[in-house]
Image (cartoon, rainbow, N blue to C red):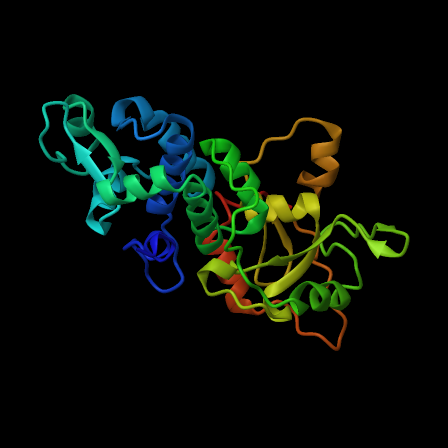
Length: 287
């Protein structure tokens, strides 16, 4: 059984390049649970708050964890039973709580996870690579208690993407201008995808931007974004009271994004629009 293919092709709500990572987040949570607690069932009412936090933090507020808890069973990876042994009571919070519903991996997947101690890590890596930008992987793993270090199956990207993006932006963060180097080698700079690779974002300069490590993380978390006019947006949901937060984040609102060298294309309008629609959180602050 190719479980890696199964977990990366779950039937999730999707419309074009819109993302709805309910099921991938539940899979990561369940894999972390399996690594730490074996095949012990996950009782919905006990896990609800943590699952809600995952959805709020890595997708958007207002999404219900009851939806993936019930619907993941349709992919043959998950089984939900009530406390009296009945089937899932449905995708609504109230019945899942009242009936003591609990989920666990389907028998054949649980058996293979028990027989192969490294399988959970490999499946976790596959889910991460298929659904989330690398800048979020470490934080996601910490949130669900999942260890994937050394797991095979890392995503394959165009090796030239990072080099081309950093050259295009002359090894300088397009948001803050940071251009650090050590012994002639750039440090603290990333080639960020604007439209995520996992959601049809190509490895090309027109979908990339050079950002320092901090601004890359904030960009992928939806704190920072760009307007169609290539000005920096800062989410009203971001709170920072200190001088560093003000100067390094809040004061960026409305500033122009530094363009690439003339020989390279600027970020394509459709990529900027995707990020604003699918990643940026809340409304932009006034400049």
